[in-house]
Structure formats: C-alpha cells, structure tokens
Length: 266
Image (cartoon, rainbow, N blue to C red; front, side):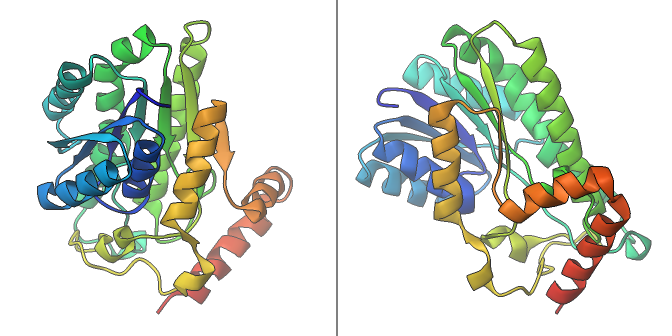
C-alpha cells in the first residue's frame, strides 16, 4: 500500500482512527475526514508518527457538497484516490414505540447511508482511474434486524444493498467493493447513541467491553480484507451461524437477538 491514497470518513476515533494509522504504517497517504477538527489533528499526528502522510479535511458527510470538497482536496493533495473507506456513522438505542423525535431516523440515514452514497459518487471516477477499492463499514445489523436499532439497522441494510448493487455495476472495471460487517466493537460511538428524544448521549449498551472486539483488531481485519480485495467480511463466527439460521429458522434468530439485547440492557 506504499504510495497509495486512502480517504477515510469517520476517521477521528474508533475503527476509522485505527485503520488510518494502520494504513499510514504501511506507507499509505491518508485523508482523514470527520466533523471534529481537533480529534482529526490528533489522528494526523499518529499517522505521521507511524510513517505515513496525512491530510485533515473536516467533513460532514450528510452534506453532499462537503463530500465533493473532501474528494477534491484529496485529489489536489495526492493526485488521485485508491481507497475510499465509508466508515462515518451514528447509532441509536430506543424502542420504536418510545421514539418522540422521528427526525433521528433521517439523521441516521443521511450519515450512515447517504453519506456513503455522496462520498462514493464523488470519488468513483478517481477510484476507477486507479482500479481501486471501495470499502463500506456496515454492521451485523445490516444482515439481520436487532431490537432498539430500527433506524440504525435500516441504514445498514440500505448500505449493504447499495454496495452489493454497485459491485455488480462495476464488474469488469477493475474496481472492487468490500462490505465489512463488524459486531460489537469497543469504541466511543456507543456513548453518543441517539435516544428516543433524538438527543445524543444515550449509552448504546452496557455489555462488558472485555467481551467486545477492540477497534485495533477490527481495523486489522479490515486491512487484511483490503489487501486481499475481498468482497465481504463478517467478523464474528457466531454471526455466520446466525445468518445461516435466519434462512432456515428465522423465528429462532429473532428470539436470540431479543435475548441478547435484554442481557446487554443496563
């Protein structure tokens, strides 16, 4: 990956931050996008200490024009784009019947799904020119519904459908599409979950972080899949079993998901 250029959204913390540092350590030029400029500056320093070059571009991916500016800055600085990693995201924690602010569904969809669409639209000509790779950091909730995640799961299902369709459209162009489906990852995003009132700060789950995947491990798995140009990564072995069960005994999968969330509830 030495000399390759990677644009990463949601790069100010968690999976995006660790992936940026890992790419920089392999000699990549990384373009760091998120809303928090101070956090991006810290990640930039880590990337440079790892041996790579980094460019900070504060970006709200829910704004299509901002996504266009992000891509333009990346091309201006590094001449093109080899990898686009759509990682920016919002989460929620609320039963649908308890929601009082329906705008949270639109906010989640604009960031998680449309943000990826906007960035991909602007970056695609440049990625095609280099026969590069599009990466969508989705979720296991994009494979199967999960209680208290109605809006989040819907956005990830949309993301999965979009990139699966795009992969087919891009067949023969040299551009590959990788969809990543992590499970629970110990990142700060859980502390910023949107609640039924649409406000951030509702802790996502109370599960012991020692039982979750850490962000570095998740980033390493994504990086390996990028190097192999895989089409999909489902990170938890148990999730692969659940996906198989869903086709055979969907009611059992619903009960398992409900039980899991009840156990994780504070």
